[in-house]
Image 1 (cartoon, helix red, strand yellow):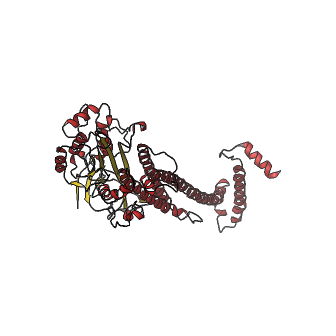
Image 2: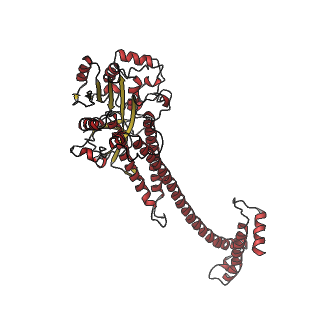
Image 3: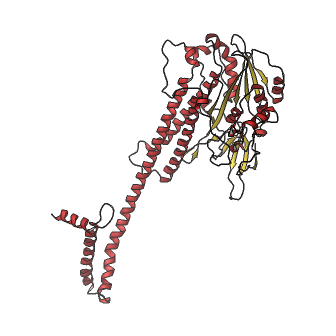
Length: 523
């Protein structure tokens, strides 16, 4: 099932006073707060132009779940809110004192932002950071992407984690211009040579916010999740420049690549658990881990931070992403191995592989930027992963995510070095092939030059000495022609060889070079 419509055009007009953040929230007290905050936070003024195909106000797929923690840190069964109306009715009820609540929300629109922002006292920049998709914007009229200073980041109150979900495609899309039709997130495509990979790498975000009301035992937490990949936008380039782009929307299923990420609950703890995370969306996975494992682990580990499940899921997605890209690099590098020469490799194929490597290098830089931002927010040092001591409580060791992200950061750095080395290798192979082709062309030109040096003097001698018909082949004086022409051919060959001795290393003819080489040749 698919539909095609004209794609919305990007904004190219200057900023005005009407750019006051009204795109982010519906009417109400929270929108007034946003308008007042625009001078302090320019990021609030404009929406991300990369999401113009699915504006925030057009998003309808919203669902939420509520979890409550009791005094023993045990979590209650979830209360589900499949529609915004039910979620709104819940917040209209008075909130009890000294309660600890976790709201898991999938999808955003202005009504949800206004409701959650007002009731949970959320900083508007939190929603903007979660909504952004672009990695760079360079025009003055585009929205601001400037992050806050690292010294202002507090992972205990809020953080936003960008991660990537590798999915298998059931059909070939045949283009790089693909995005999620429900969130506007990028759907990164990959090519090996001239063939498309049957996978898509979905950009995803998980955002956490915590509001403390009276004391440390009276708080509400919010976790924002992106919807699953059920629809895709395919941007189709027009045949003529004057025509607008078209936007094709398709519905399909994209199962997780190779079954998805590995479960991160240690084996002894899951001996009585047969279920596994759905791996269709972060929302469903978080519901699974909170309901299935939180209470059992919290009995053995006091003060368990429930955000550990979100951190582990994000880290697990990165590990699968690393394995996929290592396989890509190995596949790209294999044609360069076990070769005596590269004569059978076409230059166009090398150029295509080099272009794909450049895209891969740029993509890895994006991954490093995202994982670095996560580590900054969680105050994780940029060190090599530390190995816990033998006496460490396994539950305590498992609840710490520092070594997970340090390992991912280290592997991404190694992956970037490997991709850059492969890029240099492809450049070197292209140079080798180019040099071999130049040698072949030089030999061909040399052959033609020798042929010309033989036949040109032969024809030149007849004109120079005005030889008549008596010297043509078959006549009695034909031998005189050879007696004159052959010495002339030898003379020209010798003159050219001697003249060639005068060229120096810069391909310039110099008399001193000529005399020096003649002197060395004879004396």
